[in-house]
Length: 71
Picture 1 (cartoon, helix red, strand yellow):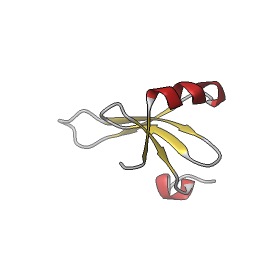
Picture 2 (cartoon, rainbow, N blue to C red):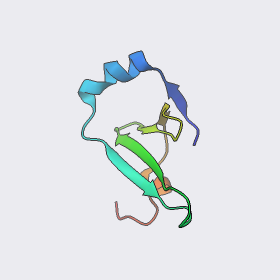
Picture 3 (tube, rainbow, N blue to C red):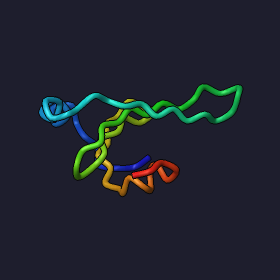
């Protein structure tokens, strides 16, 4: 996953605006741990935490990230 890195100071300044986080779990195969991505959906971007624990601001249409869900 790529996006604009969000440093800790910026993350702390955004926290009052953030709603409840959501977690997306991606299953790779039965013998591997699933990938878990924590995210917040903001009006202009998605704030996502990657597998390395880094927070990224990602600007992308919701239908691209979740193509099988209804808007």
